[in-house]
Image 1 (cartoon, rainbow, N blue to C red):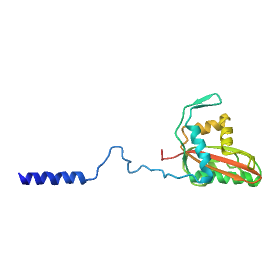
Image 2: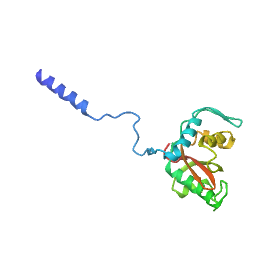
Image 3: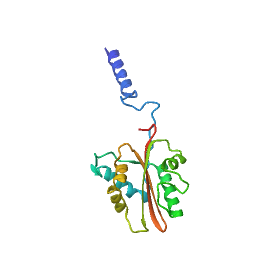
Length: 179
């Protein structure tokens, strides 16, 4: 009897100490995206964009349900910075870069593998407009608002460059093989 009790106690300890496998554990080939924090200079804009996404709204005559928050991606921010600097340096405002590039080309240049990509731009006199005013302007513009509220986009990069004018660039993307 004592032997049986000792054996059961030993077996119970083995079960309690063995690793547990939970259903729904990430499979071996699944890529888990890293989690990045936006730099202080970009955090307010990201916060405002995610607050906007958290509320259902009309973008022009198209209704959008609330959508999940975007994750910050520093690679997309590098693409945004590249375009903001280009526009500032050459004094122009366009989705096409001074070299004719579009947002897809700029994002590809940094090696970001995407399925869908989009861009919002804004500019104004240096120091006149706050991030909140820029986001409000985008939300009042159907095309810009649709990019902000697009549920297909999962990540965002953004930047602001100040020279004679302030240039804001947002790059939205759905990464390949991560969601």
